[in-house]
Image (cartoon, rainbow, N blue to C red; front, side, top):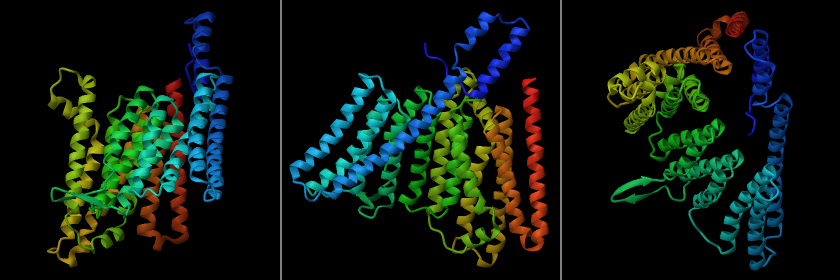
Length: 470
Protein backbone atom coordinates (compact mmCIF):
# COMPACT_ATOMS: atom_id res chain seq x y z
CA UNK A 1 0.00 0.00 0.00
CA UNK A 2 1.47 3.43 -0.94
CA UNK A 3 2.41 5.67 1.94
CA UNK A 4 0.38 8.79 2.67
CA UNK A 5 1.94 12.12 1.67
CA UNK A 6 2.43 14.73 4.39
CA UNK A 7 4.51 17.86 4.74
CA UNK A 8 7.76 18.04 6.71
CA UNK A 9 6.06 20.13 9.40
CA UNK A 10 3.24 17.60 9.74
CA UNK A 11 5.83 14.82 9.97
CA UNK A 12 7.66 16.59 12.79
CA UNK A 13 4.38 17.23 14.62
CA UNK A 14 3.33 13.60 14.24
CA UNK A 15 6.71 12.37 15.48
CA UNK A 16 6.60 14.63 18.56
CA UNK A 17 3.03 13.63 19.38
CA UNK A 18 3.79 9.91 19.07
CA UNK A 19 6.74 10.31 21.43
CA UNK A 20 4.44 12.04 23.93
CA UNK A 21 1.87 9.26 23.60
CA UNK A 22 4.57 6.65 24.20
CA UNK A 23 5.76 8.51 27.30
CA UNK A 24 2.20 8.61 28.65
CA UNK A 25 1.72 4.92 27.90
CA UNK A 26 -1.01 5.43 25.33
CA UNK A 27 0.99 3.70 22.58
CA UNK A 28 3.50 0.88 22.60
CA UNK A 29 6.71 1.11 20.52
CA UNK A 30 5.29 -1.37 18.04
CA UNK A 31 2.11 0.68 17.60
CA UNK A 32 4.13 3.88 17.22
CA UNK A 33 6.28 2.34 14.47
CA UNK A 34 3.16 1.01 12.75
CA UNK A 35 1.65 4.51 12.68
CA UNK A 36 4.83 6.13 11.39
CA UNK A 37 5.22 3.59 8.60
CA UNK A 38 1.83 4.66 7.22
CA UNK A 39 3.31 8.04 6.27
CA UNK A 40 6.29 9.18 4.24
CA UNK A 41 9.61 9.34 6.02
CA UNK A 42 11.66 12.53 6.18
CA UNK A 43 13.94 11.26 3.42
CA UNK A 44 10.96 10.40 1.21
CA UNK A 45 9.47 13.88 1.75
CA UNK A 46 12.75 15.48 0.69
CA UNK A 47 12.95 13.20 -2.33
CA UNK A 48 9.38 14.07 -3.34
CA UNK A 49 10.20 17.78 -3.19
CA UNK A 50 13.33 17.22 -5.23
CA UNK A 51 11.38 15.23 -7.80
CA UNK A 52 8.84 18.04 -8.16
CA UNK A 53 11.60 20.60 -8.66
CA UNK A 54 13.30 18.40 -11.27
CA UNK A 55 9.96 17.77 -12.98
CA UNK A 56 9.30 21.52 -13.21
CA UNK A 57 12.72 22.22 -14.69
CA UNK A 58 12.47 19.36 -17.17
CA UNK A 59 8.98 20.50 -18.19
CA UNK A 60 10.33 23.96 -18.92
CA UNK A 61 13.20 22.37 -20.83
CA UNK A 62 10.73 20.29 -22.85
CA UNK A 63 8.82 23.42 -23.76
CA UNK A 64 11.98 25.14 -24.94
CA UNK A 65 13.10 22.05 -26.86
CA UNK A 66 9.72 21.86 -28.55
CA UNK A 67 9.91 25.51 -29.55
CA UNK A 68 13.46 25.01 -30.83
CA UNK A 69 12.34 22.06 -32.95
CA UNK A 70 9.47 24.06 -34.39
CA UNK A 71 11.74 26.97 -35.23
CA UNK A 72 14.24 24.61 -36.87
CA UNK A 73 11.49 23.12 -39.00
CA UNK A 74 10.15 26.57 -39.81
CA UNK A 75 13.57 27.72 -40.99
CA UNK A 76 13.61 25.04 -43.69
CA UNK A 77 9.85 24.82 -44.18
CA UNK A 78 9.54 26.59 -47.52
CA UNK A 79 12.26 24.44 -49.10
CA UNK A 80 10.57 21.16 -48.13
CA UNK A 81 8.14 19.41 -50.52
CA UNK A 82 4.53 18.94 -49.39
CA UNK A 83 4.84 15.18 -48.84
CA UNK A 84 7.92 15.64 -46.66
CA UNK A 85 6.16 18.34 -44.65
CA UNK A 86 3.28 16.00 -43.85
CA UNK A 87 5.66 13.18 -42.95
CA UNK A 88 7.58 15.45 -40.57
CA UNK A 89 4.39 16.73 -38.89
CA UNK A 90 2.71 13.36 -38.36
CA UNK A 91 5.96 11.58 -37.49
CA UNK A 92 6.67 14.09 -34.70
CA UNK A 93 3.16 13.75 -33.26
CA UNK A 94 2.89 9.95 -33.51
CA UNK A 95 6.48 9.44 -32.39
CA UNK A 96 6.01 11.57 -29.28
CA UNK A 97 2.77 9.83 -28.29
CA UNK A 98 4.22 6.37 -28.97
CA UNK A 99 7.27 7.21 -26.88
CA UNK A 100 5.05 8.43 -24.05
CA UNK A 101 2.99 5.21 -24.05
CA UNK A 102 6.16 3.09 -24.15
CA UNK A 103 7.78 4.91 -21.23
CA UNK A 104 4.61 4.87 -19.12
CA UNK A 105 3.20 1.39 -19.66
CA UNK A 106 6.28 -0.64 -20.64
CA UNK A 107 9.14 0.92 -18.70
CA UNK A 108 7.07 2.38 -15.84
CA UNK A 109 8.78 5.77 -16.16
CA UNK A 110 5.84 7.93 -15.16
CA UNK A 111 7.56 11.34 -14.97
CA UNK A 112 9.42 10.92 -18.25
CA UNK A 113 6.23 9.81 -20.01
CA UNK A 114 4.34 12.90 -18.79
CA UNK A 115 7.00 15.14 -20.28
CA UNK A 116 6.96 13.24 -23.60
CA UNK A 117 3.16 13.43 -23.73
CA UNK A 118 3.40 17.17 -23.02
CA UNK A 119 5.85 17.53 -25.90
CA UNK A 120 3.52 15.50 -28.12
CA UNK A 121 0.61 17.81 -27.29
CA UNK A 122 2.76 20.78 -28.29
CA UNK A 123 3.61 19.08 -31.59
CA UNK A 124 -0.10 18.33 -32.11
CA UNK A 125 -1.00 21.99 -31.73
CA UNK A 126 1.76 23.09 -34.07
CA UNK A 127 0.67 20.45 -36.56
CA UNK A 128 -2.81 22.00 -36.80
CA UNK A 129 -1.40 25.26 -38.13
CA UNK A 130 1.27 23.62 -40.25
CA UNK A 131 -1.24 21.38 -42.04
CA UNK A 132 -3.54 24.38 -42.55
CA UNK A 133 -0.61 26.31 -44.00
CA UNK A 134 0.34 23.44 -46.31
CA UNK A 135 -3.11 23.24 -47.88
CA UNK A 136 -3.83 27.01 -47.57
CA UNK A 137 -6.87 26.45 -45.35
CA UNK A 138 -8.51 29.68 -44.19
CA UNK A 139 -10.78 29.45 -41.15
CA UNK A 140 -11.81 31.22 -37.97
CA UNK A 141 -8.45 31.54 -36.19
CA UNK A 142 -9.61 30.62 -32.61
CA UNK A 143 -11.00 27.34 -33.98
CA UNK A 144 -7.44 26.05 -34.23
CA UNK A 145 -6.93 26.66 -30.51
CA UNK A 146 -10.21 24.85 -29.71
CA UNK A 147 -9.19 21.82 -31.78
CA UNK A 148 -5.84 21.86 -30.01
CA UNK A 149 -7.62 21.85 -26.64
CA UNK A 150 -9.87 18.98 -27.75
CA UNK A 151 -6.77 16.95 -28.57
CA UNK A 152 -5.20 17.67 -25.17
CA UNK A 153 -8.38 16.99 -23.14
CA UNK A 154 -8.32 13.14 -23.23
CA UNK A 155 -4.63 13.03 -22.30
CA UNK A 156 -5.19 15.42 -19.39
CA UNK A 157 -8.06 13.31 -18.05
CA UNK A 158 -6.47 9.89 -18.55
CA UNK A 159 -2.82 10.47 -17.62
CA UNK A 160 -3.38 11.93 -14.13
CA UNK A 161 -0.92 14.81 -14.61
CA UNK A 162 -1.19 18.44 -13.55
CA UNK A 163 1.08 19.56 -16.40
CA UNK A 164 -1.38 18.66 -19.16
CA UNK A 165 -4.27 20.17 -17.19
CA UNK A 166 -2.29 23.40 -17.04
CA UNK A 167 -1.76 23.25 -20.83
CA UNK A 168 -5.47 22.58 -21.38
CA UNK A 169 -6.50 25.50 -19.16
CA UNK A 170 -4.04 27.81 -20.93
CA UNK A 171 -5.42 26.80 -24.34
CA UNK A 172 -9.05 27.23 -23.30
CA UNK A 173 -8.32 30.62 -21.74
CA UNK A 174 -6.41 31.74 -24.83
CA UNK A 175 -9.16 30.55 -27.15
CA UNK A 176 -11.82 32.34 -25.12
CA UNK A 177 -9.85 35.58 -25.17
CA UNK A 178 -9.35 35.31 -28.93
CA UNK A 179 -13.06 34.69 -29.44
CA UNK A 180 -14.11 37.71 -27.40
CA UNK A 181 -11.48 40.22 -28.47
CA UNK A 182 -10.96 38.92 -32.01
CA UNK A 183 -12.01 41.15 -34.87
CA UNK A 184 -12.50 38.45 -37.53
CA UNK A 185 -16.06 37.51 -36.59
CA UNK A 186 -17.63 39.50 -33.71
CA UNK A 187 -20.74 37.28 -33.68
CA UNK A 188 -23.68 35.88 -35.61
CA UNK A 189 -27.32 36.79 -36.15
CA UNK A 190 -29.75 34.22 -34.79
CA UNK A 191 -33.47 34.76 -35.58
CA UNK A 192 -33.00 38.53 -35.67
CA UNK A 193 -30.87 38.65 -32.49
CA UNK A 194 -27.15 39.36 -32.57
CA UNK A 195 -25.19 36.76 -30.55
CA UNK A 196 -21.57 37.84 -29.96
CA UNK A 197 -18.73 35.35 -29.77
CA UNK A 198 -18.47 34.45 -26.09
CA UNK A 199 -16.66 31.08 -26.17
CA UNK A 200 -19.80 29.36 -24.94
CA UNK A 201 -18.34 25.86 -25.28
CA UNK A 202 -15.66 26.57 -22.65
CA UNK A 203 -17.76 25.41 -19.63
CA UNK A 204 -18.38 22.10 -21.41
CA UNK A 205 -14.62 21.59 -21.80
CA UNK A 206 -13.93 22.69 -18.22
CA UNK A 207 -16.59 20.49 -16.60
CA UNK A 208 -14.69 17.18 -17.07
CA UNK A 209 -11.62 18.82 -15.57
CA UNK A 210 -13.58 19.96 -12.51
CA UNK A 211 -15.02 16.46 -12.02
CA UNK A 212 -11.57 14.90 -12.45
CA UNK A 213 -10.04 17.33 -9.93
CA UNK A 214 -12.53 16.49 -7.19
CA UNK A 215 -12.42 12.75 -7.85
CA UNK A 216 -8.61 12.75 -7.79
CA UNK A 217 -8.50 14.96 -4.67
CA UNK A 218 -6.39 17.63 -6.39
CA UNK A 219 -7.03 21.19 -5.07
CA UNK A 220 -4.26 22.56 -7.32
CA UNK A 221 -6.12 21.39 -10.43
CA UNK A 222 -9.36 22.80 -9.04
CA UNK A 223 -7.56 26.13 -8.77
CA UNK A 224 -6.61 25.99 -12.46
CA UNK A 225 -10.16 25.37 -13.64
CA UNK A 226 -11.61 27.86 -11.15
CA UNK A 227 -9.34 30.55 -12.60
CA UNK A 228 -10.42 29.55 -16.11
CA UNK A 229 -14.10 29.79 -15.13
CA UNK A 230 -13.57 33.24 -13.59
CA UNK A 231 -11.78 34.40 -16.75
CA UNK A 232 -14.67 33.19 -18.92
CA UNK A 233 -17.36 34.85 -16.81
CA UNK A 234 -15.47 38.17 -16.76
CA UNK A 235 -15.02 38.00 -20.53
CA UNK A 236 -18.78 37.92 -21.08
CA UNK A 237 -19.18 41.58 -20.18
CA UNK A 238 -16.72 42.49 -22.92
CA UNK A 239 -18.33 40.10 -25.40
CA UNK A 240 -21.79 41.61 -24.85
CA UNK A 241 -20.45 45.20 -24.60
CA UNK A 242 -21.73 46.03 -21.10
CA UNK A 243 -18.32 46.46 -19.46
CA UNK A 244 -19.02 50.02 -18.23
CA UNK A 245 -18.85 48.86 -14.58
CA UNK A 246 -16.08 46.33 -15.13
CA UNK A 247 -14.51 46.68 -11.67
CA UNK A 248 -17.80 46.15 -9.86
CA UNK A 249 -18.60 43.13 -12.01
CA UNK A 250 -15.17 41.60 -11.35
CA UNK A 251 -15.63 42.18 -7.61
CA UNK A 252 -19.06 40.50 -7.81
CA UNK A 253 -17.56 37.45 -9.53
CA UNK A 254 -14.88 37.32 -6.83
CA UNK A 255 -17.57 37.52 -4.15
CA UNK A 256 -19.31 34.51 -5.68
CA UNK A 257 -16.00 32.63 -5.55
CA UNK A 258 -15.80 33.44 -1.84
CA UNK A 259 -19.33 32.12 -1.49
CA UNK A 260 -18.30 28.89 -3.23
CA UNK A 261 -15.26 28.55 -0.97
CA UNK A 262 -17.40 28.84 2.16
CA UNK A 263 -19.85 26.27 0.75
CA UNK A 264 -17.23 23.53 1.16
CA UNK A 265 -16.87 21.55 4.34
CA UNK A 266 -15.05 23.46 7.11
CA UNK A 267 -11.30 23.05 6.69
CA UNK A 268 -11.60 21.60 3.18
CA UNK A 269 -8.53 22.13 1.00
CA UNK A 270 -10.79 22.56 -2.02
CA UNK A 271 -12.00 25.87 -0.59
CA UNK A 272 -8.50 27.38 -0.78
CA UNK A 273 -8.29 28.04 -4.56
CA UNK A 274 -11.76 29.62 -4.65
CA UNK A 275 -10.85 31.82 -1.67
CA UNK A 276 -7.53 32.78 -3.27
CA UNK A 277 -8.96 33.83 -6.65
CA UNK A 278 -12.01 35.38 -5.01
CA UNK A 279 -9.98 37.65 -2.73
CA UNK A 280 -7.62 38.60 -5.54
CA UNK A 281 -10.58 39.70 -7.67
CA UNK A 282 -12.43 41.42 -4.84
CA UNK A 283 -9.38 43.00 -3.26
CA UNK A 284 -7.92 44.15 -6.56
CA UNK A 285 -11.19 45.68 -7.76
CA UNK A 286 -11.88 47.48 -4.50
CA UNK A 287 -8.52 49.27 -4.33
CA UNK A 288 -9.08 51.81 -7.15
CA UNK A 289 -12.76 52.16 -6.24
CA UNK A 290 -11.79 53.23 -2.72
CA UNK A 291 -10.39 56.56 -4.02
CA UNK A 292 -12.80 59.47 -4.19
CA UNK A 293 -11.09 60.99 -7.23
CA UNK A 294 -11.44 57.75 -9.17
CA UNK A 295 -15.18 57.58 -8.51
CA UNK A 296 -15.69 61.27 -9.32
CA UNK A 297 -13.95 60.84 -12.68
CA UNK A 298 -15.87 57.65 -13.46
CA UNK A 299 -19.19 59.45 -13.03
CA UNK A 300 -18.42 62.02 -15.72
CA UNK A 301 -19.30 59.84 -18.72
CA UNK A 302 -22.75 58.63 -19.71
CA UNK A 303 -23.91 55.04 -19.23
CA UNK A 304 -26.17 52.85 -21.35
CA UNK A 305 -28.07 49.68 -20.49
CA UNK A 306 -24.87 47.86 -19.56
CA UNK A 307 -25.46 48.45 -15.85
CA UNK A 308 -28.88 46.78 -15.98
CA UNK A 309 -27.46 43.77 -17.80
CA UNK A 310 -24.68 43.43 -15.24
CA UNK A 311 -27.17 43.52 -12.38
CA UNK A 312 -29.33 40.83 -13.98
CA UNK A 313 -26.34 38.59 -14.68
CA UNK A 314 -24.96 39.02 -11.13
CA UNK A 315 -28.34 38.23 -9.57
CA UNK A 316 -28.79 35.17 -11.80
CA UNK A 317 -25.31 33.88 -10.98
CA UNK A 318 -25.87 34.51 -7.27
CA UNK A 319 -29.20 32.68 -7.27
CA UNK A 320 -27.71 29.74 -9.15
CA UNK A 321 -24.68 29.56 -6.84
CA UNK A 322 -26.82 29.68 -3.67
CA UNK A 323 -29.19 27.01 -4.98
CA UNK A 324 -26.34 24.70 -5.95
CA UNK A 325 -24.60 25.25 -2.60
CA UNK A 326 -27.77 24.49 -0.63
CA UNK A 327 -28.35 21.29 -2.59
CA UNK A 328 -24.75 20.13 -2.18
CA UNK A 329 -24.67 20.99 1.54
CA UNK A 330 -28.05 19.44 2.27
CA UNK A 331 -26.45 16.68 4.32
CA UNK A 332 -24.52 19.25 6.39
CA UNK A 333 -27.65 21.17 7.41
CA UNK A 334 -29.71 18.01 7.81
CA UNK A 335 -31.63 16.18 5.14
CA UNK A 336 -34.94 16.70 6.94
CA UNK A 337 -34.42 20.41 7.61
CA UNK A 338 -36.75 22.77 5.79
CA UNK A 339 -35.42 24.84 2.93
CA UNK A 340 -36.07 28.09 4.82
CA UNK A 341 -34.03 26.84 7.80
CA UNK A 342 -31.15 25.86 5.54
CA UNK A 343 -31.33 29.18 3.71
CA UNK A 344 -31.16 31.19 6.97
CA UNK A 345 -28.20 29.14 8.21
CA UNK A 346 -26.50 29.58 4.85
CA UNK A 347 -26.96 33.36 4.88
CA UNK A 348 -25.52 33.61 8.40
CA UNK A 349 -22.47 31.63 7.36
CA UNK A 350 -22.03 33.52 4.09
CA UNK A 351 -22.56 37.04 5.41
CA UNK A 352 -19.50 38.62 3.80
CA UNK A 353 -19.74 37.12 0.28
CA UNK A 354 -23.46 37.88 0.10
CA UNK A 355 -22.93 41.41 1.46
CA UNK A 356 -20.24 42.03 -1.16
CA UNK A 357 -22.53 40.81 -3.96
CA UNK A 358 -25.35 43.07 -2.79
CA UNK A 359 -22.89 45.95 -2.46
CA UNK A 360 -21.71 45.51 -6.05
CA UNK A 361 -25.32 45.45 -7.27
CA UNK A 362 -26.06 48.60 -5.28
CA UNK A 363 -22.98 50.38 -6.64
CA UNK A 364 -23.83 49.46 -10.23
CA UNK A 365 -27.38 50.75 -9.79
CA UNK A 366 -26.11 53.92 -8.12
CA UNK A 367 -23.53 54.59 -10.82
CA UNK A 368 -26.16 53.99 -13.51
CA UNK A 369 -28.43 56.50 -11.79
CA UNK A 370 -25.70 59.12 -11.46
CA UNK A 371 -24.66 58.72 -15.08
CA UNK A 372 -28.23 59.02 -16.37
CA UNK A 373 -28.96 62.10 -18.54
CA UNK A 374 -31.47 63.51 -16.03
CA UNK A 375 -29.03 63.63 -13.13
CA UNK A 376 -27.68 67.06 -12.19
CA UNK A 377 -23.92 67.18 -13.03
CA UNK A 378 -23.38 69.56 -10.13
CA UNK A 379 -24.21 66.74 -7.70
CA UNK A 380 -21.66 64.32 -9.15
CA UNK A 381 -18.98 65.21 -6.61
CA UNK A 382 -21.32 64.49 -3.72
CA UNK A 383 -22.65 61.34 -5.40
CA UNK A 384 -19.10 59.96 -5.63
CA UNK A 385 -18.94 59.90 -1.82
CA UNK A 386 -21.40 56.98 -1.67
CA UNK A 387 -19.25 54.35 -3.46
CA UNK A 388 -16.10 55.73 -1.83
CA UNK A 389 -17.43 55.21 1.70
CA UNK A 390 -19.07 51.85 0.99
CA UNK A 391 -16.00 50.44 -0.77
CA UNK A 392 -13.76 51.46 2.12
CA UNK A 393 -16.10 49.72 4.54
CA UNK A 394 -16.00 46.65 2.27
CA UNK A 395 -12.19 46.63 2.33
CA UNK A 396 -12.15 46.70 6.13
CA UNK A 397 -14.82 43.99 6.31
CA UNK A 398 -12.90 41.80 3.84
CA UNK A 399 -9.69 42.06 5.84
CA UNK A 400 -11.47 41.20 9.09
CA UNK A 401 -13.24 38.29 7.39
CA UNK A 402 -9.91 36.87 6.18
CA UNK A 403 -8.48 37.17 9.68
CA UNK A 404 -11.53 35.37 11.10
CA UNK A 405 -11.29 32.57 8.51
CA UNK A 406 -7.58 32.17 9.22
CA UNK A 407 -8.28 31.84 12.94
CA UNK A 408 -11.22 29.50 12.39
CA UNK A 409 -9.36 27.09 10.13
CA UNK A 410 -5.88 27.68 11.58
CA UNK A 411 -4.49 28.85 8.22
CA UNK A 412 -1.56 31.20 8.61
CA UNK A 413 -1.54 32.46 5.02
CA UNK A 414 -5.22 33.44 5.13
CA UNK A 415 -4.72 35.19 8.47
CA UNK A 416 -1.66 37.03 7.15
CA UNK A 417 -3.49 38.05 3.97
CA UNK A 418 -6.23 39.65 6.05
CA UNK A 419 -3.70 41.58 8.13
CA UNK A 420 -1.75 42.74 5.08
CA UNK A 421 -4.93 43.83 3.31
CA UNK A 422 -5.93 45.90 6.31
CA UNK A 423 -2.47 47.48 6.37
CA UNK A 424 -2.75 48.18 2.64
CA UNK A 425 -6.04 49.96 3.27
CA UNK A 426 -4.39 51.99 6.03
CA UNK A 427 -1.50 53.07 3.79
CA UNK A 428 -3.84 53.91 0.90
CA UNK A 429 -6.03 56.06 3.09
CA UNK A 430 -3.00 57.89 4.45
CA UNK A 431 -1.76 58.60 0.92
CA UNK A 432 -5.26 59.57 -0.20
CA UNK A 433 -6.21 61.81 2.73
CA UNK A 434 -3.09 62.95 4.58
CA UNK A 435 -0.15 62.40 2.22
CA UNK A 436 0.04 66.05 1.21
CA UNK A 437 -0.03 67.25 4.83
CA UNK A 438 1.99 64.69 6.78
CA UNK A 439 5.11 64.60 4.63
CA UNK A 440 8.07 62.52 5.77
CA UNK A 441 7.09 62.65 9.45
CA UNK A 442 3.59 61.43 8.69
CA UNK A 443 4.95 58.64 6.49
CA UNK A 444 7.41 57.63 9.22
CA UNK A 445 4.61 57.50 11.76
CA UNK A 446 2.44 55.45 9.39
CA UNK A 447 5.17 52.87 8.72
CA UNK A 448 5.98 52.67 12.43
CA UNK A 449 2.36 51.98 13.29
CA UNK A 450 2.08 49.38 10.53
CA UNK A 451 5.26 47.67 11.74
CA UNK A 452 4.02 47.68 15.32
CA UNK A 453 0.71 46.22 14.19
CA UNK A 454 2.45 43.43 12.27
CA UNK A 455 4.64 42.66 15.27
CA UNK A 456 1.60 42.47 17.53
CA UNK A 457 -0.19 40.16 15.09
CA UNK A 458 2.87 37.90 14.84
CA UNK A 459 3.11 37.61 18.64
CA UNK A 460 -0.60 36.89 18.89
CA UNK A 461 -0.42 34.20 16.22
CA UNK A 462 2.58 32.60 17.94
CA UNK A 463 0.83 32.50 21.32
CA UNK A 464 -2.27 31.06 19.71
CA UNK A 465 -0.28 28.28 18.07
CA UNK A 466 1.44 27.49 21.37
CA UNK A 467 -1.91 27.27 23.15
CA UNK A 468 -3.34 24.95 20.47
CA UNK A 469 -0.39 22.56 20.70
CA UNK A 470 -0.02 22.72 24.48
